[in-house]
Length: 91
Image (cartoon, rainbow, N blue to C red; front, side, top):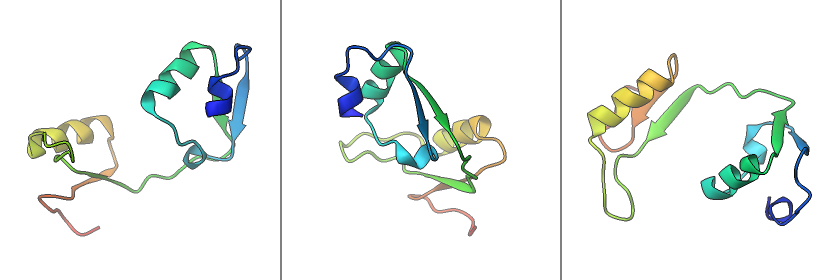
């Protein structure tokens, strides 16, 4: 992604990847590249079975665990959400 980031001729480029696990980048780099016009398509979809969330940041701040989980469940309908701090149902 860094090589693409530095490319000043990025506009109109479409990057085709195997699946979403093939891109690892910082959210700021991703947003800047999308702003520059990068288009990304995946050949294969990912079947997400569950998402874990941790309401405690290594930097010391935290989120209300229940509110965090409820908001994630609202956005990710049909996906099992497990809070790694308070625990949850076995999957």
